[in-house]
Image (tube, rainbow, N blue to C red; front, side, top):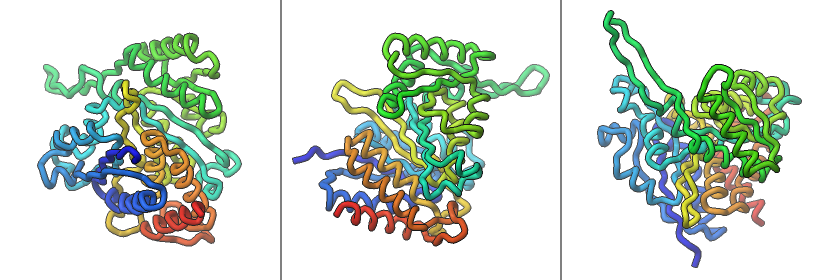
Length: 370
């Protein structure tokens, strides 16, 4: 009998529950047709948890996440909670999960499906065939460094402080993820920082260079300043294979890269912890789009980023490459057939709802599996 995998599902706010429902249908299909053996639990995070429990995430949910083989996350954020204290915002849920599970490496692929090359704001010839992986460090840097806060100065004015901090071990572990990822791709890594004006950036460059020389000399390594990288992503994005960078720059560059593909609604992500002695690792998978409260409940959200996040989960946490590839090919075929949700709609295409897009992917999976 196959091992039972534990999956924690956290739909979150806004369109999160809507797009997660389409994944549930795919999970059911894989259980029935491909022998996927899952023990699934579901819980509240973000604004939904605030409404029910008064906190963006409960300790019980964090413990469930630690006990799971993988976490599938929707999205958090709700304007109804704009008035709460900074540490009670819905977004604290995802930050606490990253911190408590030590999810230090965020993988954000920016891949252009052939059928969507025209959807990008860049010229089709610039983005067609694009396939970049951005590896972003997620539990260090300026988002978590100390000291931080807002203080009142003697003259009554205020000062906000955030600190950019990285250690050798923090840099090495995320760089290893990038180098290992590159070995399974085109074998190229570009390390991005601001060593010209930031000491933390200088250390980043030194550590990555030394690690490369010791353990990964077979991988082609280049270095680039973050501002230049932003420009190059727009100018000639296909020059990159794997980009590895810190928390702040990774946040900005991955969102920039996402728009090369045409829509945030298309892009999945994975955030990984360290590999344990038993071979497992904590991991969380989520679309990079937000909760989109302005369209929540209308049935028009694009579920493909959530579906593709589940495909990444199958690949990296459950070692089910064939099932992951099946989902990705089904998505590609559906797009090639001309079906579009509102965010990727263009002339001559057929506009479909969230549910119709999910069902179309499911039908295509059935055809491909014959």
